[in-house]
Image (cartoon, rainbow, N blue to C red):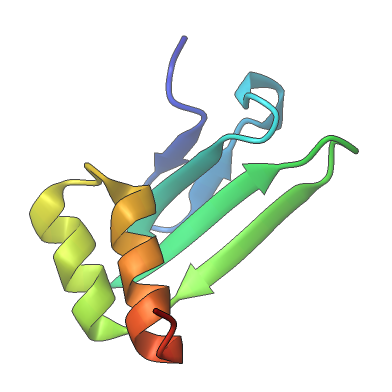
Length: 81
């Protein structure tokens, strides 16, 4: 199965039918991270992250450990221990 998020120079294409329910997908477009998530009600949720430090960290890691990177970032940003 092909990754359901594809980017071109002018847009992001999301193939909702290819998404696994409750799995997080991402892409980096226009120096922003876009997160896509299809929930149990089959709604597509999209989040945009513009924090330069976080975008650069995800680029550097090539998306590996994305959940861990996002969790650590949220904990540091919100001062959660």
